[in-house]
Structures are given as structure tokens and as C-alpha cells.
Length: 352
Image (tube, rainbow, N blue to C red):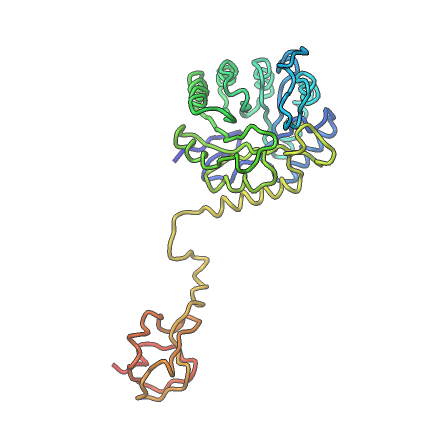
């Protein structure tokens, strides 16, 4: 069994409830008061952590007009947007991080972020984050992974569209630079993602292949896919978060609102509780219910010496009489005593 990983004071592993991360992304609209309300709402919903994204438009891309730097996919939420302008709009100001992290800690949540360059790693390390999150599009940025790994903190890495070889390279890079505590997140890098593109069966395969904790970064609508992932061994669930989708936000369309996040926390916990262990024969909690099985009862009054057959015996609930498996043994036997209707048949009632 893959060992657990410690993030701050929280253990991540099969023996712990799923760890739920509320990703604020750029849904704060660069309004600090709104971002603070989002942190509080995530805490009220029961999330275990909030996550930011740490970058500037200039650290993400180049401010040029070339078509290379414009989102050309017509089905994208951000079709036609210049990358630089989009990242300017979605960025979380560096000066907010310390206050938002402190607010999360006051609400008993962990707080960390996705760095997108080496300077962001150093900045977050200075804020004593419990881990770093590598975004799926950065999984092939081995210099970034190497720098983050060198800080001696666990890494959470989204795999997105990465091939098995690319994941192997990222994990090997992290290991080579001092990081052994790795959590991989199965992720579909479409926004939003469709359930039929999520391929949750990859989760146990990935866990076995890399010997690490595996979770889900989920961009699909609702909570069904995330809850299902727990049954396949996901120990971490990351979902984008927004106070109200109607108000917009760069990721609002595939983000959960507070009531949905609360439901995610509750239902993933129930799914984890339901996993249990391999067991047959009922649990202690079911012991009292056994009385409602069927057994053999006297269905008509019987006198001593009467032959017992289907005219005076019946298999009914409850289970205080002889088990139904004895039915053929009993038929044709002779009653040893008088019995009233409703008598639970026992061996002592039969003449031997």
C-alpha cells in the first residue's frame, strides 16, 4: 500500500478522508474583498485547503500580437483572447498572497499555490507554504519542477495531457532534486471537461505505476466524477471555486459554488467511508437485522403426533425458528408436542 504524505498537519492517504482543494484561480476578478469572501466560503463549505496561482502576465507569456499568442480554438471559453491580456485579467496579485494564506489558516485550512516560474517558487517558499502545485501545462517544465523540488516540500503535480513518459520524466526530475513526497493528479486539460473524457480508471494504474498518492484535478461540471474517483483510490480532489457562476469569472463555467463544494466534501467523505474492506457475512451494525430473515414457523395449530407438512408449517419472517435449509428434513416428521399457530419451530418440537 502506498504510504501517506504529510501536508502541514494533514495526512494524505488511503486511511484518511479525501483532501479537498478549492482552487480560487482568477475567479476573484482581482477584487481582494471578493477573494477574502471566497476563502471564507470555502472554509464554511468544509474544504481542507485553498489554492492560488502565482504568476504575472509577463512570467507566463510574451506581450506580442502574433497569432501564436492568441487563443484560436473556437470552442474555448477564452476564444480570441490574447494570452497576455487573459493572464493580466486572471492573475492573483503577489501582495495578496500573505493575507489570503493567513486568512485560510485562521479558518483551519491549508493554503498554497501553483508557481509558474522560479521566482514564484522562491516567493511562495518565503511564505512557508506546505507544498507546491505544478499545473498540468507546466508538467514538462523540468527546470521549474527541479527548482520547486529543491525546496524540500511535497509536490502535487497535475498530469493533464502528459504521456506516461512525460510523467516519468517529471517524477524522476523531482526525485533527483530531493523530492520523494509526490501526489499526482489525474487531470483532463479541457475547460470545461466532459465526464467521458475523464478516464478515471487511470487513477489506480497511475498509483501502481509510480507508487505514490494519486488524486483528481476535475474540470467537469458537478461533483459526480469527483465522487466516483474516490472509489478508484483518489485521495486528493481539486475543483475550481466561485461564489456565484452568474457573476462570471475567468473559470466560472466549470467552477463549483459554495453549496456544491459543501456537497463535494460531504459526498466524497461518504464515498471514502463506504470503501471499507473486503467482508462477507454482515457487519456488527447488521447483527440486529438478522432477526428479519426467514425461518420455519407453525402456521396452523398442531397436536402432538400430527404429521408436519406444508399445511401446518410455513417459511416466514422473522428468523427465530429453524433455518429454511432444514425445510425438507422437517417435512413428514411427527410433532412431539402441541404447538400453537406462530410457534417458532425447533428441533425439540419434533419426535426423534
